[in-house]
Image (tube, rainbow, N blue to C red; front, side, top):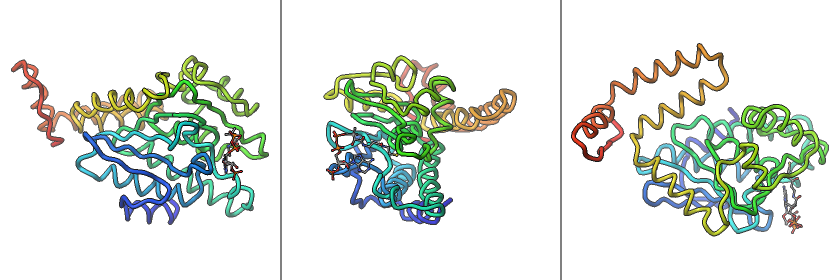
Length: 273
Ligand code: COA
């Protein structure tokens, strides 16, 4: 992991220049906010994202994280092209590594992350949405990996996560043409789970987040871990991971509480223990 991302993780505070951080009803909302650049990601913003996610993962009151972009036009319009235009071989490699580290932190983190895609999700913006556990979109959202039209390739995981999500053929069509698709097409190919009107996006996303927040937090954590670790290994290895985590979750107080509540015909009171 790059030093920049590691330092941000250690700090994990909530004082940001390029992000907004809100915590209410056990849901942390992280909003990328560089409105004059359509929320494009430079390294400072990426390092802040690492700190925000690490802070949210560590915070006992946060059960679910919603990630969105400031304004009504853009989720994130990509990596910062000004920054990319100045890079050479070595800083190109480290810039890519910083982005990949942040995406991995989100994808592999212990709490669920939902992307609320409220407009352009291009290049690094789509890669950021892909690092989240699933995506809801506003009807005006636009998705694409336009890197080849800039003479580069996706560098924050897009060549790997997009084919795994929507299949090799559809992903390669987007990656090789650089063409954008709208929200309806994104829904059709399984890139997003739901499309709603822009003014409903946060409310609908928060509704799903609060359903997840009401479930056993350790069960939610182990379920995400089983899917994350199991996705990229042979089925037999994935099933072994699931069996181990099934055993682990069976040792929790939450498991006893969930079962007892069902038998008592009452709502469970999970404590995350
Ligand atoms: N990096 C840096 N700045 C960006 C940016 C990016 N990825 N995307 C948008 N911006 C900036 C623009 O340069 C412009 O800044 P300026 O006002 O200082 O000139 C501002 O954001 C507004 O963008 P603009 O292009 O004027 O808006 P638009 O509505 O005409 O077009 C887009 C919107 C998203 C189609 C267009 O901005 C675009 O194609 N952006 C680049 C997308 C991309 O290729 N991303 C992948 C990068 S690897």
